[in-house]
Image (cartoon, rainbow over all chains, first blue to last red; front, side, top):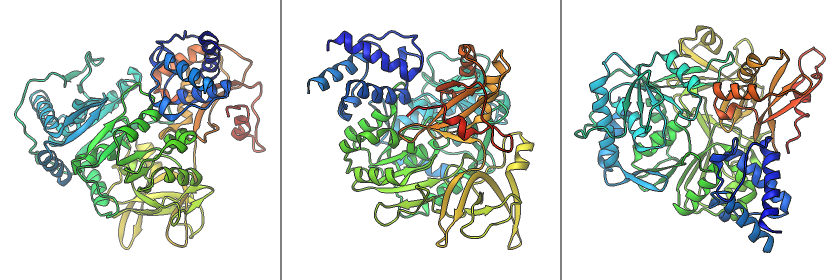
Length: 81
Length: 498
């Protein structure tokens, strides 16, 4: 799966949690850029992403995840693991 | 005022210790003393003595904490407002309290209609932490919680109230902070739980670690535990509910104390969490804002002290000088083992809701005990007392719910949603439990589907973000119970969010 395909699946997870589509996701996107993306919804998004890719993130990775780019990097490395 | 004097002594004594770690930057008690003195000088200079209630914009910085101490040294109260909450709501708070002066450390202030003390970049002042003489019935702070009529409800707390809290915690030998402790301060300063997470570390000369705004709270807390080796955690149970999938990766031997409060602590997760903290004492605290944060606790231990009711850990016994009373609807004490509403009496009780006689008549009553009149606060929490004298939490008596530790009146959400809606249809706010066991808000609308964006825009203007429903469902006809009331239990089934 390439980064674009991952991003598209990630976007679906965001929409399902945030219940709206008014956002764009790029590597640099952070919680400040997306309406409704905060601590609580972040946890739900993470769960949703884990389900969508059948992966389980490590707490150490989640701890240092600061933007969508970091998220995609973690997904990539989990998919390769 | 004894505890303010102790604050002064602790700040002076620990001048070379760190007081706060904010976003990775450490500040010493000496810097803190200087900021306090600068703000204090500005307050003395600008504010007349008779003006006792001072607004405080709760930024995550040294100046905001210094502002609290500066006001206390002058015998004044802080009225905190969260800069992330809609301005309209904060302005309402200042209107209700007739606040004219606001301490604001923001780069640019939203409070131009008030007399602003810009606490960042004040001129240097000589360090002066000597407190003024003032009487203990003066207010130390006023906090606002969700109210049923769309207006937030003010809870004033006096210096005597805070002194009684400090006295009760000091009397508890199993909880004793030391200057080397590193303490989590995860609470917004408009939330009453914050009082214990800044006051006790300050009194002990310990260091507090805050959560930067915009950080993902749950992971940031873990990062602090992991990298900064925190020793004292004070949290709402929803934090560990969200961290639960990752417990297997958490081992924090440095944590000495972990205190919970502000929501039901479930026994299964308490045990699992306890396994992550091998050297830790766990306290399950209970207490409403109206009773100065804590009124008592249950000392949980995964092997020896696991008392619970319907899976919720016991709230234990009242602390020093506090009285618990479980009553029926006529405010008469019920028998041991019977469920009733928990009422609290003692020196930590608020003088009463701010300018709200109607509410005060409902929520407080006086009872004669041993020839003394004891004033009680009715918590709205259903509890029972067991044979051993421990109190067990059963549930809420009304439509108040806890969202991430914050008290929310469902009626306030319904009020704002309905008042803006062009369609005059029935709307019901509900607390729904997600798969991790946390409460989230849903809004059920009795109608065909329509665009609710403008209603949500309005709600976001009127209420803090934790009060905005995260799920909306349109239901053509609401289910009703036999006695004609909307069946909330049935309605909740429409929200399949797990």
